[in-house]
Amino acid sequence: MKTSSKHLKLLVITSVATATIPLMSLAEDKVAIQIQQYKENDKRINVSDGKFSIEHDFGPNHTLSGEYDWDSISGASPTWDSITGASAETNSDAFTGASACVPQEGDNYYDYCRNTRLINGVVGDGNTNLDNFAYKNVPLKDHRYSFAFLYTYRTPIMRNELSIGASYSEENDFKNTGLSVEYLMYTDRSKNRSITAGVSYMKNDVYDYLGDKDEHGEYSLGSKWNDFDLTNGQVGITQIFDANTVAKFSVYYMHEDGYLSNPYFNVIRRINVIDSSSDEYTKADIYPKYYLARDSRPEQRKAGGISIQTAKSLNNNTTWHTSYRFYQDSWGVQSHTLESKSYHTIANNFRFSPVLRLYTQSEANFFKAHDAVDNIFSETGYATADARLGKFTAWTGQLGLEYMSSNKLTWNIVLGYQEQSTGLAFAWVNLGAQYKY
Image (cartoon, rainbow, N blue to C red; front, side):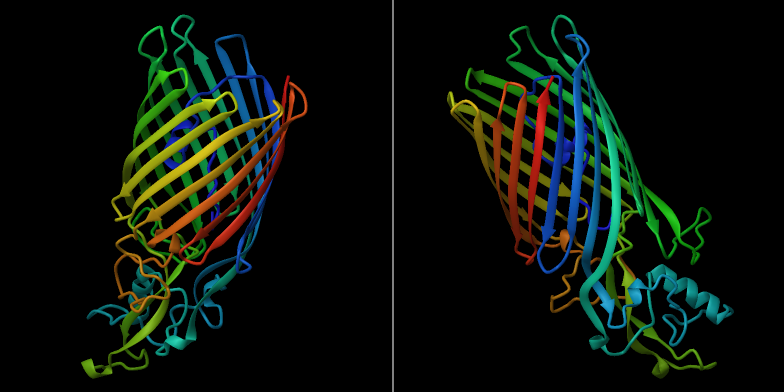
């Protein structure tokens, strides 16, 4: 869960909301295996991934697809930390030394301030010197596996399609269970126009090593699982204009609810404190102190947008795909994605497909970059330094190569590279084979 950004391809609606999808599809009996290596710069994340998939037609009206995915992640993820590494200490004593609060009259000093610090998400002891904090890479290691199924039924006459999907994904600190339903309906027998509508639901469980509110609204120090739900909905229309041109327009909506904070990202908060050894105090005894605190986000996020996709056959050997996607959410994030992809066939058994993608995003309204002039948060309120919620631009280049050694067997390799204005850059290579039986 820490840094994984992969999603299950067979969850139809989620794919619509997060990436472009093929305009046309053809059911075939086939099996495929893919192996991918992903690596970030600055000695950050490395991922080794494998996937096995199978698709089978049970007569002309029924298709069943299945996918099993496994990966291993290692490296380090950047976040605010103390020089001594307090964020990595799961049993760190965050409640000794100077107090992060001033107890109210009649309250027990230690218990009141302990709960207040938990509310603030304090990870370690505070410090009056900001030089004792650093934005650095914190080591991590994890394993993940997932599986997904998709069943498609086609009506005998109009060939409308009903697709039902299910998936499950698990790693040490994250679990995901998903369901999806999509219906594709042709508006007439010519099949030049179709309407697609669908919805998906995901239940997610995140492991919090410092604890959070229980069912009674109380805070505790024990580690626990927290959950959040993700619901997606989309409606699209596909139009075939002529023998060489097809386009699709979609509108989508997403709603997340629950524990949306990331317990592996930290921020720095400025808190007024008073020496805990003093039984009596005045305003002069209160002074500011800096504390490492956990990422804190709203428990709801609503998002929506549109996507436009086109595909045009330029000649017998060349097809050009373009897409645009607009996204906006209730956290203040807005993004635009523009992509161009073309397919070029050579000598009937070799095909290559270059891709260029441009992306731009605005920042969330509770984000502060670690290197900004104002990068310190106040005692309360939502707060994140996660660069994925910041303002940045990115470009992606990718080249896919396919070799059809026979009518049944196809080998492929994909090389990709992305660079972001944040300084993050990463590359990947994907090798695989597909066999039609």
